[in-house]
Amino acid sequence: AQSVTQPDIHITVSEGASLELRCNYSYGATPYLFWYVQSPGQGLQLLLKYFSGDTLVQGIKGFEAEFKRSQSSFNLRKPSVHWSDAAEYFCSYNNAGNMLTFGGGTRLMVKP
Amino acid sequence: DTGVSQDPRHKITKRGQNVTFRCDPISEHNRLYWYRQTLGQGPEFLTYFQNEAQLEKSRLLSDRFSAERPKGSFSTLEIQRTEQGDSAMYLCASSLEGRAADTQYFGPGTRLTVL
Image (cartoon, rainbow over all chains, first blue to last red; front, side, top):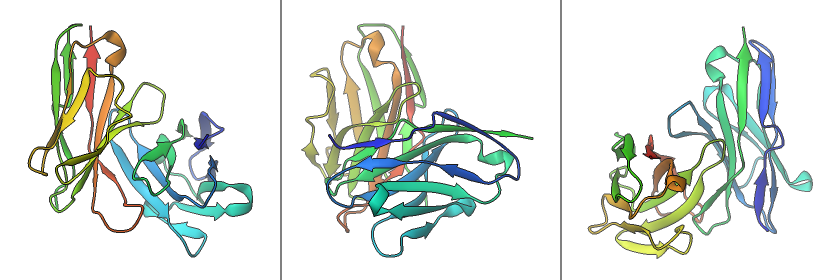
């Protein structure tokens, strides 16, 4: 079955530390991949997307993600986390059928 | 440039009542999507429209759920005879038809609590 897996339910990092959130997908072809962020009680904000081409994509708020076909992964990274980055992060894909399939999310907490 | 808006933001209802939510997409977007998000989970696709046509509705959770987009602009999602299990955040998104995988922009959601 097609799916998205985010192995880490919770992650805590210190402010200023680097961050990597993992995402693995299960799909026969190369899907279109997205990362969204959700603050408590809010909707989802698009951070970045990968369609094709350069496998390292830059997004808003200093985030980047790298698509690795061999590992079926699309991990999100940030070199230095800010307290305002505390939120829930969702990886998703679109298989060109217009339906987004989401992972279960990773909740990020930032220690001062 | 206004984003996707949803109304109401919060709805509390008693079991068995009907509820209706509204979504206004980004003005030039012709595709509109509904998702449901339960606590601690990622959003789950329900249905989508291209203009006024509902192109996918097999994922609606039961026949108590229905959605409309009569003039290809705003959309409504109705839940009839609500149950406690319907308590969730209902998210709307919109996109502009173009590439095979349109980028979907989400509204703030409507949080439904069924007592």
